[in-house]
Amino acid sequence: MTNFSIQAAEATQRMRKLFAATPLQRNDHLSNVYGADIWLKREDLSPVRSYKLRGAYNAMGKQVDKEVFICASAGNHAQGVAFVCKHLRKKGVIFMPVTTPQQKIGKTRLFGGEWVEFRLVGDYFDDTLRASQAYCEEVGGHFLSPFDDQDVIEGQATVTYEMLEQLGRAPDILILPVGGGGLSSSARRLLTERAPETEIFYVEPEGGKSLAAAVAAGEPKTITKVDNFVDGAAVARIGQHTFAALRGIDADHVLAIPEDRICTTILEMLNVEGVVLEPAGALALDALKDLKDEIKGKTVVCVSSGGNFDFERLPEVKERAQRYAGVKKYFILRLPQRPGALKDFLGLLGPDDDISRFEYLKKSARNFGTVLLGIETPAPENFTSLSERLEAVGMSIRDITGDEAMIDLII
Image 1 (cartoon, rainbow, N blue to C red):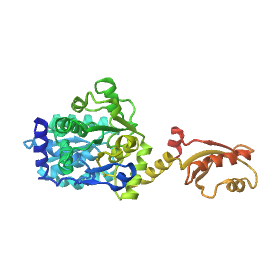
Image 2 (image 1 turned 135 degrees about the vertical axis):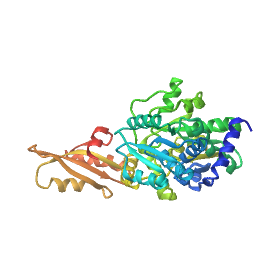
Image 3 (image 1 turned 120 degrees about the vertical axis):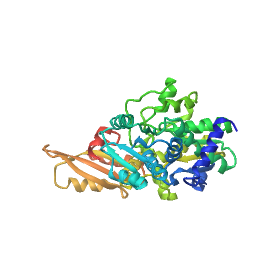
Image 4 (image 1 turned 180 degrees about the vertical axis):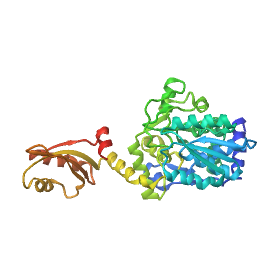
């Protein structure tokens, strides 16, 4: 084995002191849908329900002389660090934004117990990060980057190393989610040495295309606007060390997935397979839709990178999935202000159309009232026939489903 392969092998052996290898499972449902041999590397089944535990353990294990470990995170990285602090019996100080939900704080505290201290600083993550780094310098601790650290990258390589061992061969295609690049850079380095024939696809959320920006520029670039819905992969700037390993990849192998479409995959895996995935954990699986022609008849591994899904988000996920599928829409309806107008409107609905929202927004006009209308229906084409029926009787209706500003205000 070459150098990085040896490092990954040794890191994989170290992981066994902390947890068993996560399963590599063939998924019959996805295999049947896409006509391929599709396997899932189930990082959502690690002790902290994400692969971030690996990088934290590898990096902290190499710095056991340090008295205190510090990180800034409100998600999977914090949970991984907390878990390792308890295992190594080392103090950890985890900085989180003030806006972090109590559910995330409580879960991280559960993993770290008495070994972890929490500091809530700043409304935005950049403020939190600066505070954590200043504190680290002040106390002489060891700062744990979530991705841009060579020891963290080496730890994340154990995902790919285990996958190769479990499959017994290299897959034709490996599909990876990308945030800061720790997982993807480690996979590329290892497969370049062990299985250069394996094709790798890198998947980002549409609202966080930091890898695509870096590939286009030839160096890491900060993107100005990030959609944080896919919070485990929504990163404004890919890491310097991670991009060094990703430089030169084919831009056509970097895919961007709409956030609303990811929601359809989260629901599909939950309802059909009983698999709970967070948005970042569903990225690689969702990309199969874009690669259906490419993967047919091939052996494909998708990394399901995390399952830390807060079920309080389920209504939002369902809402976004329905809007993406075209079976839920929002309209502004001008309804005549006369007796029987509402009854007339209801009579125009199809037998399967369901009103999910009906709210007067304005009642000052003498002849017409403005109504916010939400409708669910089993088939997208039902909306076309509904609009035609409304227009035929002179009821003015405007589709606002795609108006982001309006949707943000009313939903």
